[in-house]
Image 1: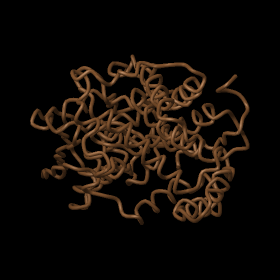
Image 2: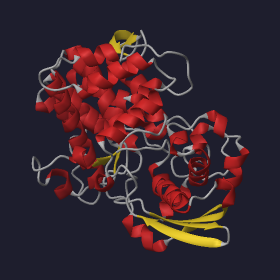
Image 3: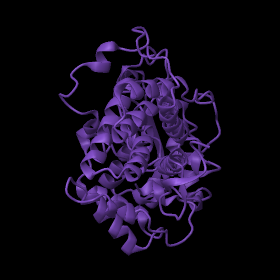
Length: 401
């Protein structure tokens, strides 16, 4: 009864109000559902879909100022990303966000609640020790909505705060094993820079490992003005982990499509990049797309393996009209080294919102987000995300945040 049921937490774009953990769970689930959430290469995961919903939930309840809310988000990113980046990738799977994002959720919530360091530490230890094991990740061949356990870890972390406040304790030494965590990476150069500045943004609703192949294929198509039906074959060279995705040419669901490099590449080539903002069910049975996806061959490039997870490169070789051309992509669009402009972020938001919320509501939300600073109240933002969607859709509008 402490963490679930009706309460003060806002469920975005609805009239529902739930307990903080429950509200953050719903908003986090929506934020990660479309595979358009942000990411961080060193951490190999997606911090924003956990930390931002949790921070906004607690910030509204606590009446936090904009600068304090933004500081909480930055602190949450810093804690979660340092911990994930410090993990030994061979002993602790780092690509499962739910295993480490809870640390950042606790840090952000604890900061907003002005809790003592001792309570925050206990809550972080509880959240870290009880994080989802993600047991199916790595072998499941079915698409699913769990999305690395992000929403579950978000709710779990806020419950950990409740438990710590009630006197519950956690294993405070869980990060102290030098064989599992790089102690220097955990704490080195604190205050000299911010991990949140090293994140990336997606422009396709697909696994990040598909983005370099999509960028390369679209660039070759534009270079030679190739029509989709003129493409004879596409060979994509990848690091080993990318070959473990589902990669089905004819995905049976949107979730499977999001983890298919051949389908994502083919969809972009046939219908343009905006068809991936987001992927919708109408394209799953599009024979032009599935036919081209079957002509996409994925090959292992061993020389790319050392790049992962710091980079997600790809080599794209396209055959058309008896000719071939090849392009190497080291940093897909949206990486800090190949960043999106403010206008490109605006365009992404506008395209996703189109048909899913009233234009006036979308503009109000966009204006509220860009106006946040230390002087303007957060009320404008919370009022904007209270706007109901214009019509029902299978694409959760909360992912816009």
